[in-house]
Length: 127
Image 1 (cartoon, rainbow, N blue to C red):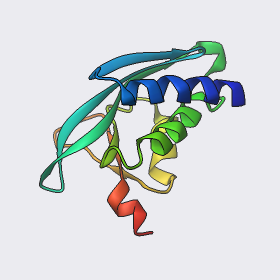
Image 2: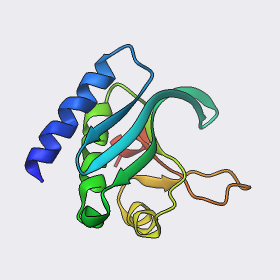
Image 3: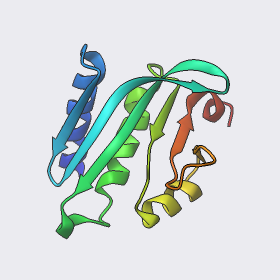
Image 4: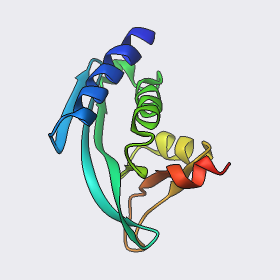
């Protein structure tokens, strides 16, 4: 897992520093589509890092690869974005994990059937 995290973080940091607005970060067994976005959060337009899609090889699911990637995202985006947004979480295990993990809040529109979550740096810095 440590080698995975090193490779994922290197790709993530390259993207954050680049002029690209979106990219697939592919570090087997995980592929994650991310983008630099602007969203209204708490009534203000803010720079937000979106995790829009993630796929883990079937034989590696449930082994912590996406969770490890999210840890890298939280670490690498601190000071560069106001929040991290994970949209349309269709995996119930992941939804339960984010609901119980420190810092993540449910962030969905009332008409949205699939939950999304947000990690706000300004809120979590106060804790």
